[in-house]
Image (cartoon, rainbow, N blue to C red; front, top):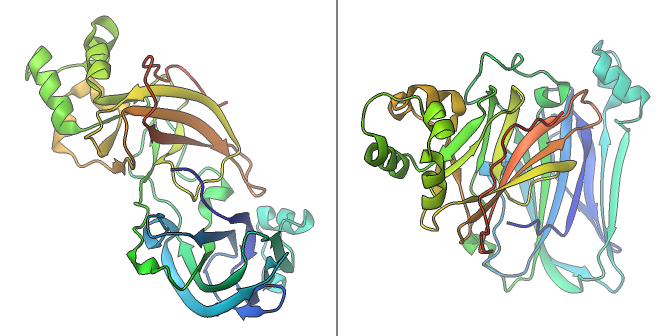
Length: 351
């Protein structure tokens, strides 16, 4: 799914903010945020503004953005020619100036945190009367769904230790009933991985193929994948995504959606997944060493939106101004493009 947002901004805010407004040329719409939005001194801040043009457009909600703090609907807001949208709020810097954390103090010195936040965007495409729904969400710190003894300790970077506050604005005509719009599924997994990376499968179809090809006995699938054509059969059948030979680290793995902001995509692999497969289990590659033991465990699920058999898997990185490290992320995107060859990501490090 491509980014459909009309406007996206990202920065930082303090745990206490006030005087939050969304402004146009002629109006100032109050955003009723409780002054205390988080127990964390600093939060990552996102502003997402979407124009909802029809009822087929997928929208975000708590599954992606976290707990809803507040919402407000303004009806019949007029946009004029050459209009604009401006978002503002004030951070309470006095509360964090006494904080002894060096990262926070460096953020103050570098003006990463400002007393007043102001973003503006010209919106010449908006004209006439619209309804505006403003929602505020808070997303907690991601907890790993699996841990590898090879990777560094959990939460190695300050960027991963803070919550995210999102102001999510929907702009739509009163003829559009946004209650009918479907929501983007939560298709994100976070965990630490070893050098054998991870694989993604429909476990039922994958286990059936393995049983047909090599039987029910305990197996080392890493050995079989590297010494026989078994992995090629899995690729040909469209039931396996795999990457190994990676740097042991903490990774995000997620399907493409319109909440993503990335620094750089550094490598891309191509895979085939049957069109009827809509969900894939995400499993650490170490589990291939002791097949079929992983069938007795519960694994996180990635949901693949859209149609088509081609899956692009991109290894990307992102980093914020509070972070000391690049944070790697694998992004899956499904399409109906023709698949020339399966080209897995093998033996590639993000550093």
